[in-house]
Length: 528
Image (tube, rainbow, N blue to C red; front, side, top):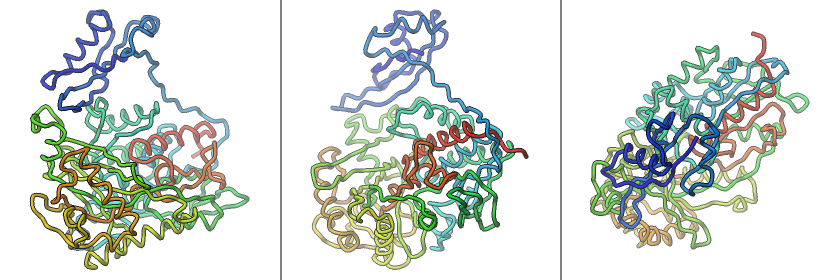
């Protein structure tokens, strides 16, 4: 396959313009190619000169004809199309693989194993997606939290309520495999071409249901409201898992529980699993008007129908600790993401249309393992302390503590709402984040807000709304695994973000596929 990159067009141009430009660069006619299509499209809004930037993929009659273009131009790349394979091991599995967690890492691992004939058993502590949505709505309307089924736990994982962002910094051939899988189960086909693809929470729900049904049709099981409570270890190997429904024989356990299933870390520690503290971040959600974000990025072209909703990713590394934005949600809302009673946690999400009035992002400060002497239990205790403090400062009723930027910068409690109104669905209470976070967090944010505002005009406008606390950016702990992807407890495969490997939907899903490939290479399906 040939990739013709860095094709820039005006915002009124279509993908066909990019295709014609690619043919011209290759000195080919349409009839000379076997296939040609837009591979990726991104937006370059630097310096106010807004352009679409295309990458066009071309297939010729043979690989030999394609290789003739190697070295022709720095914008022409010849690459082999990735082939994702699943080898079949010779050792007969004695039991069906068990996958704990049905987020992106869990459902991609389960689907891959199901397609290879392993008929996996999935344990999901939370509810199916339709019931889970009702539990989330009940929390938002009536302040009744379900600790087992909420924005963190349940079918689809935490990513279901974060707009289905598929942006990743990893370069892995499995990314295309994951994207194709999502499209084949109902995701919009355009996500394969977007530089910053997203599905949207509203559409992701259907995709997840379709994947679940496919797993079941292939002989797998998905057990909802079924928490993993313990494991049985003999001679350093897993032999069974204990659940709310009883004990299940198990020699292969894929742990895909997500970053918020804290009890699992402590359970594994009691069995001697090697676990270490890892870096994470804490802070707030900051909201602005989406129109102001668009204006800062697109200037006079803001609102043009051909332009997507404005997105940003900002960072400040000038201080002792890094401050950065994370999980930016164009046209989105702040959501109530607590998973433990009497705590407040915030996150952000967008629907597919991204048509909300506000944009928001996490504004967070780096936290280091050495802050806790490398002890992951102390890191988890730190998260919990912030979340409980936020609950108290919010009024003890699941309202979120809130402060506008102008008052935060002056050390004044509360808010001064003007253009931007908070979107947190339960309600907010005026607070002082200096009384919730340790000083290294608030001092770092206070130092960085003017820096980030210079990078994106209006980011730190006085009426921008800050809501807290954001503590679940990533797992504070890593379950150590070896080159065989197993813990020191053999048969235990820590997987994805919750185990400290790979963050975000795409990279977590890729890790799930990787684990499935390894299991397939070691075993053949058990006799059923």
